[in-house]
Length: 554
Image (cartoon, rainbow, N blue to C red; front, side, top):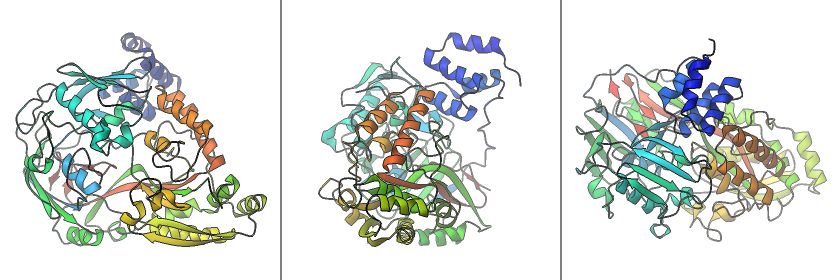
């Protein structure tokens, strides 16, 4: 298709310099169509507008997201992990709990399967010139289940609750250094401004479903969420029984299209195998998250459909940089070179993963610099590095980790691979409570171990991965990595509004981390959801959320 410069010029007239730079990147071929859509959604450009720009640039319209509507009125039954604690939007941190909360409460915007931001309670958003202030326009006519209309006061109160250190909010891992209590400001009943601590080019993800605590609830909320389950969502609570399950009914006063299912039922399971038996036996219709190894029997089961999402979830292997034997970066690189990433993807993860390149920049991120060479297994080079570091005779070291998903099997593979370069690895595999401890330095096997593997869930942008485990003052810096050049680059990346500027900085970060290797990112695993045949319209996210408003049964 040819370019229509007349239409492009008309579109450009009402766009900011930042938006026009992105459009130029698409027209000139510097930015791919996929990355244009994702970054354009981040800047607040609507999906229809992005489609028109794509057409005018000669690349075709947006792919249709519409699905054939299924029959209404079904009861959809879901197998879920048990919520680990009382369900409270401020403190919830586990997959089972956030899944239940997300059925009734909504976000300003939603991080879709392709990392494209979609409007929800906010209709639109845009940054100021340097990304220090983001303005969100709210949807009108949205009602809470308790009756009142959602307005700016509710958004301000909801986000202030999360940004207040006194509340011990789980969302402080996202907001610390970005957004303080009192910096979310009401402009009018349907406009909110976020005044940030520093420029942030990816901020809308921080108040999207990507930050699972950031649901909007009434300003009057005082606690005891399990008594009300008040929200704006397409379903309302019917019954909640701790440790057992929950059920929801269609919200007939919903602001958007009414949900297709009449009811949804969630049954809590402590383990994956009983979930699989329940799905195979017809007691449930969906397993929200299915680990690859535990669910391998379902991957080729003709009675089951697998929804597979590319995610950036991963298992970080940290090497403590401030103590032997890992003070020398050559030893850290040697370990990284001993791993066979192709076998990790094909064998351990049954092809349901992408190889990692020892930085948070996964292939799924549009800002990842794909020109940085992928690290491959090279035992000869690893041995040379060990010799050069004075560790040619090898050493003994303990790898401490958690019993979760495929991590124990991953640890055993690492144990076998590092034998080839003379390292004798003792495995210390703990239950999750013992591994994480108090999750603060000095009181945590995770943060204090010389070598460990930690599970990190999906995020739509790499900001949290770049800061918490890798910056010198990072709250999750188990590698005890302190590098001023890295800190400067990470701050620069987080501030950048422009996709090409992000990518240029990302390449420098990727190369620096390959050289230093404080953390080994071996693979990024896909997020799998299993459904019974005939169940359609199910939309999971890699954040463990499950949107069921379009679900139906044949």
